[in-house]
Amino acid sequence: MTVPDLSEQDPWESRKAWGDVISSLRKGDMKGVSAAKNALENGQRQMRKDEEAKGDKFQHVFFKRVPNDPIFDELVKHDPHAYTVDPSGGIWKSTSKPRSSDSARSIAT
Image 1 (cartoon, one colour):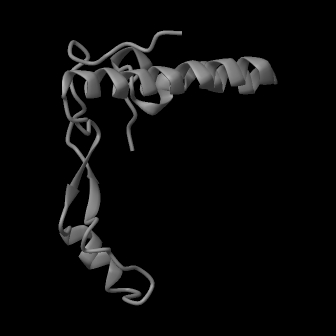
Image 2: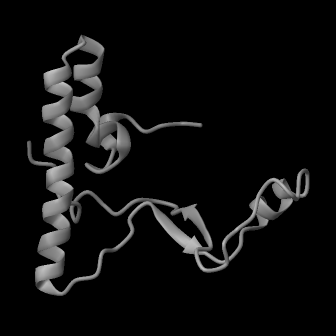
């Protein structure tokens, strides 16, 4: 697996979005962890409120729901009783590329 450099990542990709939390964890700064986590989560909550106020529906960025997946079907053959898919939920599959950074919202801290 190849992970793009942080400079090439969308602001909402995990390593970039949670970077301040990770940095604070590495320093053992629990207050910093809490502050960074709260800033990120509050930013996401505000985005949902803004979308709702405008009548926009949340658009999934990194995953899409699919009814089935040939790779999953092949893997589950090895232990067919271990995995099930809820038909109402489908399978969440990674999209080929996240939305471009020019349309992504920045994370305000």
